[in-house]
Image (cartoon, rainbow, N blue to C red):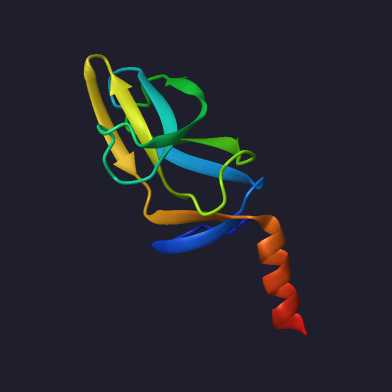
Length: 122
């Protein structure tokens, strides 16, 4: 976020910010499809997704090398107070796996953030 990697724990992000989501992948012997989602919990099976982020990305086999991809997520339209955890759905043939990122993102109205900053700077 703004050039900062978000670590474990909760992070407040203003609604309408564009988040750059970067992921690393490796698939030794076959192509795979990676799709990013925002979920309210860490369970991909209970339909708690709040957003599909971008479109599914087809990636060719990488052999022993890691590759990376970056997707921009425009958070316009997310409701104030929404909490989200980003995860990747990786499909390789008939197998699917899910990988959740550590940070919890709490979306807040940008006017609230501005008010807080003004209070801290006074």
